[in-house]
Amino acid sequence: MKNSDFDLGEALLNLEQAENRKLLKVVSIEQLLSLEIPPRDNILTPIITSQSISMLYGIRGVGKTHFVIGIALAVSGGGCFLKWRAEKPYNVLYIDGEMPAVVVQERFSRHIVSLDYEITGSLNIITPDLQKYGMPNLSTVDGQAAIEQHLDNVKLVILDNLSTLCRSGKENEGESWLPVQEWALRLRSKGISILFIHHAGKAGLQRGTSRREDVLDTVINLRRPADYHPSEGAKFEIHFEKARGLYGDDVKPFEAMLTEKDGRLLWTYKDVEESLTEKVAHLFNEGFKPGEIAEELNIRSKGTVSKHRKKALARGLIKDANDVQCKKFPVSHI
Image (tube, rainbow, N blue to C red; front, top):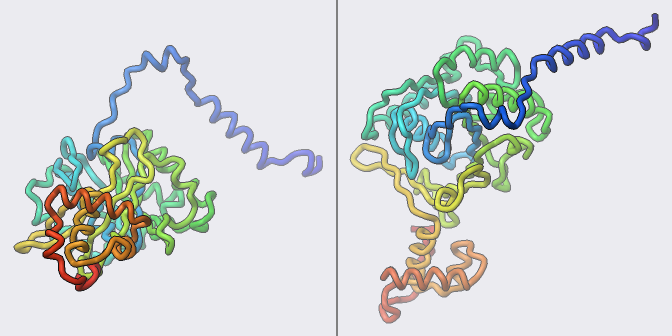
């Protein structure tokens, strides 16, 4: 018999697929509707639910790690982070792929001493410096298996970040993402939520293939405000680019900033619209004209400046026109 007539590998593959088809469970619509399926828990209301798969991305240095440490602590402590609250403590596994262990220790320590609640859930950390044989490659079956043995009773897995933890294939090829996607779906079937952390490219969009977004429930982008200055540290706008089941105020963009007061870290936040109104008011008080304000704050039209000027006047943020002197300096230099 010629090889062209019989391919053992293909025959085995067909046999395996046939066996897999036998394992599929099919239900009628009547059976589906009668199933008693537990409702999804709110892990961090409303942005992370049980079995959700989410992604947070932003440019390097924007403050992503501070942000996700805040999420990890709130979920494991049943506390609050920014506008969101954990209904109760849940177990969290935080997998860091790039920072030195001393930096991970220092960052978590500074955030924990600033909390007003206790960490009563389990918060476990995997970080490179503590591994004898290096970090697992989560694009491979072996790498995924290495993590799965640490997932007992875990409700949220945070992967910080994709570039360092998923190292097979090319980042901009959709096929390279499929092994990670299949693993995420497998964890979802076990009731586990996943939060991927990723980098943005030079254009500010997530780096690599957009195919990642197909399976994601939520995509959050951290962006620098138009008037950002490096002296402000971790300050960014939070934008929802995809949000299944979220709408209205839950997905309105807002601005967050991490500061230090009396040795404790402090998060503050405000709606992007409110923040922009305050910036417009500041520039009007400095004597800037509408066109100059639009250029300084990267606003596309003078009409938008006028709208925020009216809001600022109603809130008493703009001084009387007779008190306004010549402009002094742009807000980005304050």
